[in-house]
Amino acid sequence: MRTRPDGPVMDDFEALDRSAQVWRDALAVLPEDLSADSYIETWTLADLVNHVHGGGIRYRMYVEGPDPELVQATRTADHTVPSPVEVFDASQKALRDALAPHPGETVPHPALTMSTEQLLRLRCLELTVHAWDIAKSVSLDGVEVCPMPLDLAQWVATEMVDSLAGLRGQGYFVEPVGEPLDDQRAELLRLCGRG
Image (cartoon, rainbow, N blue to C red; front, side):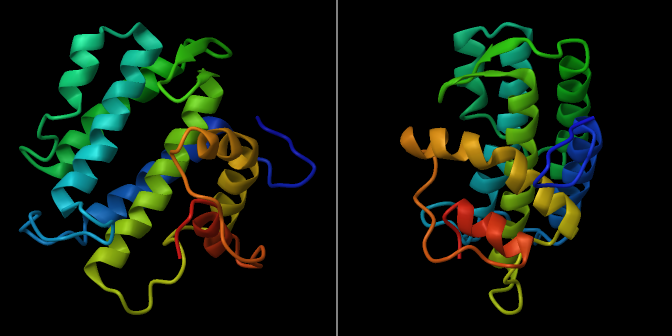
């Protein structure tokens, strides 16, 4: 159980499961044709889904001891067949199962070495923010905040504030623009350079 004075109390695995549901909800609004452009410049919807699904597979590999060739292969594999939901559910369960017996261990993420807890929180961030990317890709109107519960957004933003600074330094995120926002869903997007 995580306890922070500046954020909600939430179990890491509860947050992971809730973030996974936010992503599943986003997958449900995908059009049949994933070759359509996404909100992220130069990425199609298939690229976005493959990035998130491949990331979950790579994270499991980081926990279990990565084989560089297998890790690299996940970057070009099609993680949308037989369906995005089937691939996600299988890979997310495998990641969850891999993380559970390894609390506090160090894993070799390409950006920086981190604990399994930090890796889990980064996964929550990816699932929730990229869910917004899908929602924004499908409809540019009326999707100004992450489609997620406020308490989950606050938890992710609070838990990731320090890690985001380190990841920005590695070029994974751009600097946030503007002043902090009251709505934690919008603030999470701002922290990740969205908006």
